[in-house]
Each structure stands twice: as C-alpha cells, then as structure tokens.
Image (cartoon, rainbow, N blue to C red):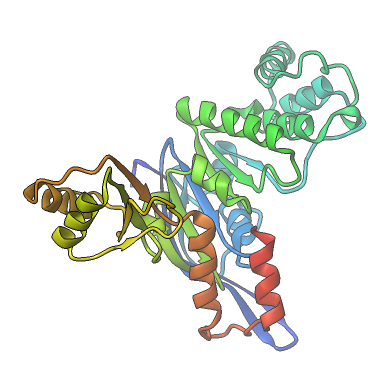
Amino acid sequence: MTNLAIAVNGLRKSYRGKKGDKVVLDGIDLAVPQGTVFSLLGPNGAGKTTTVQILSTLLPADGGTVQVAGYDLTRQPDQVRGAIGVTGQYSAVDKLLTGQENLLLMADLHHLPRKAGKRKAAELLERFDLVDAANKPAQTYSGGMQRRLDLAMTLVGDPRLIFLDEPTTGLDPRSRRAMWSIVRDLVADGVTIFLTTQYLEEADQLADHIALLDHGHLIAQGTADQLKRLIPGGHISLRFTDHDTLTGALTALGQGFIDPSDDDRLTLQIPSDGGVASLRHLLTRLDTAGIEPADLTIHTPDLDDVFLTLTGQQQNQPQPNQPQPNQQQDQQQKESLR
C-alpha cells in the first residue's frame, strides 16, 4: 500500500430523494500508484465528480475504506487536505485580482512567509507562462490562461497528489494541449494526477491507467490499449506486392478478407485484438509458409468505441437501486463525450 497514492475499497455513496435512495457509487475499488496519471471516465451523472469530492474530503462517504496520500480519509482528513491539491470543473480564480495577487492570496492561505510566497508566485508565473500578464486582472485572461492560473494556484502548496476534475472543458485545442504538457511535466516531477475528463483523447494521451464508471459501478479498468482490446473491430492489415502472394497468405492463415477500400485488392485484413501474442502467431504462420508482407498495420478501436460500446451495454442492464434512464437520456450521455 505504501506505493499507492490512492487506495479505495468498497466506496459507496447515495443521496436521498423523493423516490428513495439513489445510489451514486456502489462499492467501487481503486488503486492509483504514485507518480502516475489515473483517469476516471464515465457519462454525465456517472459519479465522477462525486468520487473526486469524496477523495478530496469535500463529501463524506457512506461506506468503504479510503487512503489518500497514505492517510486514512475518515480519521485523518486534515492530513489528506495538506497533501493534495484540487482543480475543479469551475475555476477558483478571483477575476478581480491580478494573476500575481491570486497566487499571493493562495500563499497566505498556506501560511507561507511573505518572502517565500512572493518567490513561489514568481516561480509559478514563470512556469505557466503568465509573467507578461502577472499584473493584469484575471478577468482579462483567455480561458486557457485562467485554467493555467487555476492550476498554478493549486501548486502553491506543493501537493504530491492533484485532482483535476475536467480541467480542459471549454478550452480550444491549442490550450488543451498546453495543459497536457503541464500535466506531463508534473508527473515527470513525481506528482500523481487523478484526472476526470469528457475528452477521451485526453485520457488516451495522458493516462497510465483508465477506469470506466457507469451507474455507480466500475465496468472496466486497464491501460488504454487493454481497454481497446475489450471490444471487437480490431484487425491487422497485411499488404502484398501481388495477388498470388496474397492468396498464399490467405491459405496459410485460414482466415481474413480482402480490404474492399484497396482498389488494387492487395491488402488482407485479419481479425485480431492487436496483442503481441496474436501478432506473433500470425507472423510465425506466414514465416512457416515462406510469405512476407510488404507492409503491416495494426488497427484497434479507439476509446470512443470502447466508451460507447461498454456504457451502451451497461445502460441496457438494470442495476440494483438505480432508476433506468430513458433512451433519449442514454443518447444525450453518449453525445456529451463525443
């Protein structure tokens, strides 16, 4: 457990409503190694933000055991708060203050001496490319600049674990990639990132491990590549220089079909999960037959396919203590992550 930034077992949370209790988290387990990016994905209302709020001590859990940064969440909440940083969906920046004043305010809240606070603010302004705007009101900042300032404010206390709850929502592609670069730099320095996002490309680019949450249940966990191999549609494309070689390959492999998009009809598609074992088996059979393709490409489903397939299946299965959303709500949830 010592190498885990977060260890969660059987986490539960429900809210009382007019029609009875609505279970938001139904006994989830999480293990987040130190110095990694862990991404929690799920449709709107799946429980992502509730999970972040519980792990960052903003909400009490109804059940389960949780350790954050080595501290028991229930017995040592103050120690947890001192070890973490949180950048939520909505910016904590005071737009009437300048960028520098926002950082100095955070330094005061962390009880840093005045000289140390000014030094930390200058360091973060430089790191987040905000020096030129340091003395301008934050309300004049672009969306990307405000999100960078928001994250810089989180770093004033030097947290080793940061919760990023949809940090790039509403940003343009360039600003989003700038935030990705900042996240990578933080992880390279040993910081652990717990990321929730509605941009599946973001999780694919950043996360070492991904968990998919739906209706309060974790329905899949693994690396991006492992999740992509969970659903059908993957294949290996083999291109040959002539039709005789292609025919020989088809005979040797005993499966596959000619790619209809190839006008020359020289490309063979073989269903595959894209894994090393299946690729090795395919190449061994071709080598035994004395056949060598001119080109080989591995195609796997992307995270959009994984998300839509797995959450679509889950939404068709009744969950205990959970009201079933109607078909229109299902579609809205799926479209929100597109």
